[in-house]
Image (tube, rainbow, N blue to C red; front, side, top):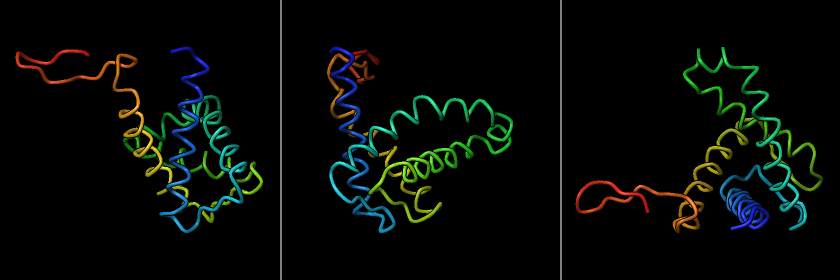
Amino acid sequence: MNDIFLFLIHLGITALSLWVASFIFRGIKFANTGSLTMAALLLGLANAFIRPIIIALTIPLTVVTFGFFLLVINALMMMFVSSAVPGFKVSGFWTAFFASIFIAVLSFFVGLFIFQSGDHPILVPAQHGLTYT
């Protein structure tokens, strides 16, 4: 698959996860489809460019908390995106915290379902051990 197609698939997965999260968490609201799409796009960009910098700056805190501080960083990314996208509202830190966990897990499983072909190797048990498909 070409890069733009993969980007669009990941954008769709993120948008779907955000949309489902808005039904589960009352504190997440979208004004329209445009705000949902813009939030998914900006969340992907924030996670690709801003999040690694924040992780690098907070390595000692992440190590001391055995990696749990990464959940706080995920929540902060969601709150940052909600402040930057008109029509996307997150009611508070704890909503962002638990919603970001939900979104990460849902995105992971949807991605596994979509990318189960030869695009990304998945370990599949075979008769004589584990093989890559």
